[in-house]
Image 1 (cartoon, rainbow, N blue to C red):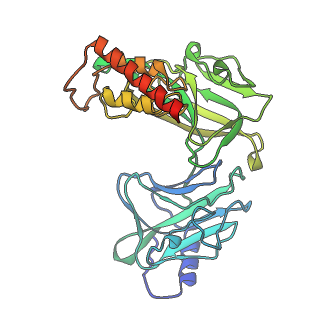
Image 2: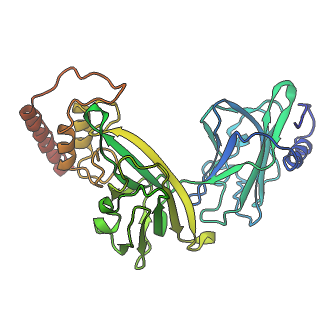
Image 3: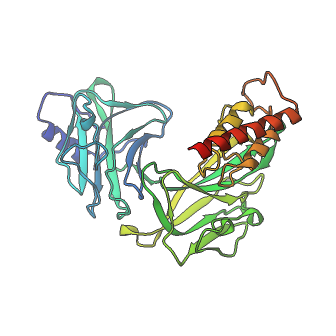
Amino acid sequence: MLRLEKKPIRAAFVAGAVLAALTTTAAAQNLQLNVSPFSGAVTVQNTSGSPVSLDGYQITSAAGKLVPDPTNTSGVGWDSITDTGAPGWSEFAPTTTGLSELDLTSAKVIPAGGSVSLGFAFTAYGTKDVNWGYSVAGGGGASTATPSGAVHYGGGATLEVITLRGAGNTIESIPMILRNVESQVSVTFDAYVIGSASGSLNPVGFSGFAGHGVTGWGSYAPSANALSELNLTVTPALAAGRYQPLGTAFATGGTKDLTLEVHAIGGGFGDQPFQADVVYLDQLAGDANGDKVVNIFDINLISSNWNTAGLAGDTNYDGIVNIFDINFVSSHWANTAPGGGAVTAVPEPATLTLFALGLLAACRIVKRRN
């Protein structure tokens, strides 16, 4: 254990001592550095089940792919904890090869499962050579240092596997979407491979980009172990927050062992693959607003997003909000998820249909006026 007494001495001297110690002292892995290769966003995430008191860290890149921010401009380059005005924190000689800061008086408490944003401290599409170490405050002014912390490259293209459940919590279908989870930047890639060692993919239900008529994409030898597409004609881009339906390509009862390999275009990545994130979600079929009840509020959300290509209101995950989403809600009307609220009034089927048609008519009038 590394013990650091909190004494009023020069920040640079203490920071140097801490950073040197981070190369020699080991501790449990409670924090993870998340790096987005597409946007350059960097966050420190607490992967443990308890709060962690971060009091120092160092991020390095031998290739010089870090982005210091001498002007301390929010949203540009490294947004340090010091930049937020947190008391006690001080930066230590930021460069493109090293970013570090230390709290001499207390610590930054990160709750279980929580995270701290460090801005866009990585060069988008840069060489993936980031390493980091950190120290955690303990009792009596001591700190425990982890010389080599976990680094995860994520964000951008993410595979979401969505289990839709109907009445009685039964599984109706499992659509998959490829979504850009970045909020500000597009992602570009010209190939991807979804793998399953257990054979839990459903090639019959796979549609992908090609199945939705997206220019240049082609599917190759789909099987229960691998689904892939390649684009040789254009430079594909998935805008911030947008998604591409891939069909019902996960087998009911399958093992959750999917992997996503994306071939990213540009920068230090060239056209080399990297492992992207896979997320498994469980959802009540027809529940557009996520309140665990299928009711009028889901119809309202669909009507307010009519004819758009966003996830809001797209209850069947086909890439567009339209009449099929209204039908999907009506066919699951009054269903509730475990732990969901009770339905106090349920319209007769004929009444519901007329009501939905009335909403659609009103929605079209508003669209025309706009």
